[in-house]
Amino acid sequence: MAGRSALASYANIVERLVAGDRGGLARAITLSESTNGQKRAVGQRLISEALRCNRERELRTGKRTFRVGISGPPGAGKSTLIEAMGRVLTDQGRRVAVLSIDPSSSVTGGSILGDKTRMPELSHNPLAYVRPSPSSGTLGGVARSTCDSVVLCEAAGYDTVLVETVGVGQSETAVADMVDMYVLVVPPAGGDVLQGLKRGIVELVDLVLVNKADGDLLPAARRAKREYLSALKLLRHKSELWSPPVQTVSALTGDDVDEALGLMHEYHTVMEDGGELATKRRNQSKLWLWTHVTDRLTSRFKESAHVRDQIDSIQHKVETGELTAGQGADFLLSAAFDEH
Image (cartoon, rainbow, N blue to C red):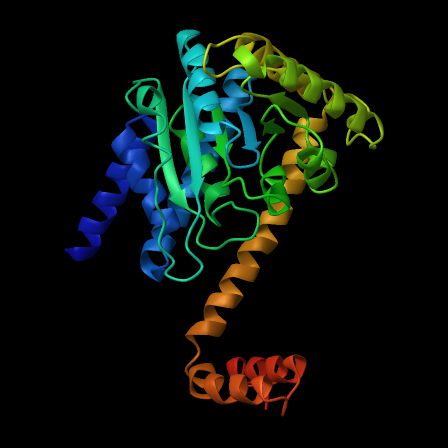
């Protein structure tokens, strides 16, 4: 009976998911994010079904969804700009999902999950779905399960998926490995901000948006645009098909948001027609296979009773210099995988 009940529950989630029900999508993402082994297994079955649905829809319509990563320093106005973009896209009849990765405390593991409150209009838009998720300390500011959440959102009928990262600097580049287009949002300032971002992020971007280009900040925004254009000329482009442009926008007034979306649409068309988008997604799938392998191995390592028995002693020996960090790691790995 319990088995039949679980099967019925799974079938119900799948049915709701592919029908575009937001509650079904939320449940599917929650299962995919779970650290519980049984729930995670159900989540992986859901993702497998979602991939099948996505492939069938792509073959039927000949259209591929658009995945966009949006990064930038704190205070750049990413959430406000995403809401402005989402408003325009939904007015055009597009269905937009926003996966907003919230920073987790390295001490408590807690997360504010406040991005939904920063997008009040989009959160209540029937053509949009906003999902804040904790980064859980993941390098790159992207929750480990975000790539799975993207697939689930697409299965639910969202043709545009925006991934907003925590915005803490160069570690943000992990988002570039799961999206079609990488957009950098910056405030109207150059100098130190430009230097701090140039090597870590700017060399990976497909579009730079200088936000807050309004009022007294408009001259500074135009100046920043020139500086970024100069910086991009010195960097090697990722693709021969596309040279990253720089566009000023104002999330507050809506000025040039249409132009920014036009550049994003142009990129999608150029890369799709040139075959680079399909190649990029295949390479990303391989990369995320090994990301999941690493995550699973780390989980098994931490759950090992042999490791728990020895970890305090090994850590103490490393702290006092009795063992090197490398030797300590070898001992713990041997304990975890019974390599005595």
